[in-house]
Length: 217
Ligand SMILES: *[C@@H]1O[C@H](CO)[C@@H](O)[C@H](O)[C@H]1NC(C)=O
Ligand SMILES: *[C@@H]1O[C@H](CO)[C@@H](O)[C@H](O)[C@H]1NC(C)=O
Image 1: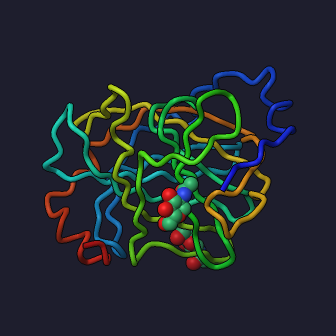
Image 2: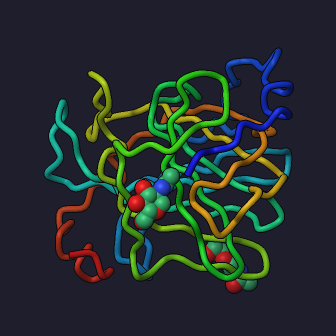
């Protein structure tokens, strides 16, 4: 499917800055998710004075620096907003972007990549599998939980499973145009803070067993 190119996007991008550091200076904490059993490195990113998006990153304890590794990502975001996305290289362009949003009572994940400051297109270098647990929508939040293969390595860049990585948030109040489609068009983010997240808090020695427990072979 061809992605339409929103004129509002282009207009809004003119004069767009490269983002700013996340308002919240807290470091990552370790969070054990009873539902999936994964231990995550958790970081709460403020998108306003009162709201935040929670990013949780789980990695295999056996992951080695300099080599690609799988990531289990959990995003918790308010249903009052439109969509939330993480850019794995910490800026909008030329890195894998994981977008999520709610579609009724279910969650949608979309794999994107922006070559320039334009609407990010579909990215086939990363593949996603939803876990059988941890995907839900209630009155206030949607929660996405996916395994990503391809989020930790692109071009000659390798994220460090044993240290800190700079990530960036894209967050918009407006909904995507077609919530049921993972290739939906969408408007520009309203905020795009970046932060540095230590992945060591999210190391899981029992990685394979946890995936099986969550329906991922
Ligand atoms: C949309 O989902 C299909 C089926 O899972 C997948 O093959 C495709 O890569 C996804 N596209 C995006 C942009 O995430
Ligand atoms: C709604 O879901 C979020 C994310 O899973 C959770 O943090 C929150 O406690 C839930 N709220 C209620 C009222 O269950």
